[in-house]
Image 1 (tube, rainbow, N blue to C red):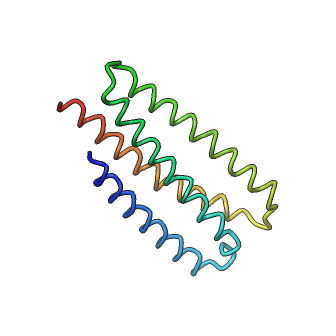
Image 2 (spheres, rainbow, N blue to C red):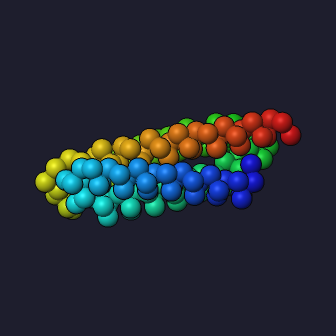
Amino acid sequence: MTDKTFFTYLASVTAGTAALLALLLLLLPPTRTHTGFAGAIMLLFVLICTGLYYAGKSAADSSSKLAFNNLVSASVFGKMLVAVAVLFVYQQAVQPDDSWFVGIFLLIYVVYTVFEVWFMTKLAKGKKGS
């Protein structure tokens, strides 16, 4: 997978997620108080995916057969820690009146995790074909 291909798909996923969130915010007024949170979480996952893409390319090209597997394991654990930390910090700092922020977070998390699995699979298969 080329950088251009990755960033094209990342932009498409981000645009689709933004449209889905806009629809959610439009249809469910209580979610509007979390608009800034939603934008920040999308940015966080764009950064995570970008970092993981470059780390995945490097691991796929590594002479170590376990480098890619180790990266995947570390990323799963790391994302879980980040998810818990972000939700906890937001809840403590903002003290929202509702829990819609959790649903918004999970929606974004699932979309970008599916995208991550897709591009990491492409990176792994691309290396096998070399």
